[in-house]
Image (tube, rainbow, N blue to C red; front, side):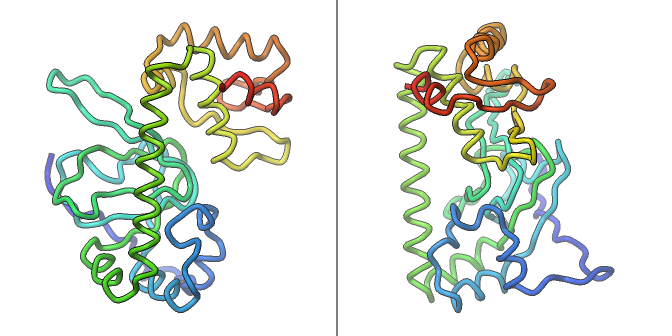
Length: 243
């Protein structure tokens, strides 16, 4: 993979929103490192950041690329994957709105980040964000909190793979999708991952994932809307199934 910096959007031909406007429109702000920053520090974050828009399937970063940039997911979702030596791909997780992506202290990306849907990311030069964190302890504290939460999420994923049943794993993933992805006007949530991707993430077969989802629907827990949307009919029941 070539070590190429992430491209900045060309803003010469269109108006660029003011930092305050950009932040007010950010769907992931309350879950991101920006959530608890005072207005003056938030303004500095907005000043050094740029919004990168990705189409579904577009790659934000390649595994092995030099780490020039890091960022916050504003909306949409990124699939995080790593490759094995034999070429197989393993899904490591999903970066939902509010997630921080990138290697703040490493020189190379250890995974690939691919848009699962139309996605926007606030992108920062790694050097600029590190320098800003030195000047503003609030940013460093927020980053530390974010990394701690990510570590806790990784530990819970290990628990899920090691101890949870197949039914509990699928239900937990649906809970995460619903919590992290805004519903449409009908109350339906986008199923960001297809069945095979869900299976890879959960350590299951595609047949098992499909069977469990159909079982949830027959039980009146969820309602499938086409192939990529679902509506939760019983929140308590789904939470109970998740363990």
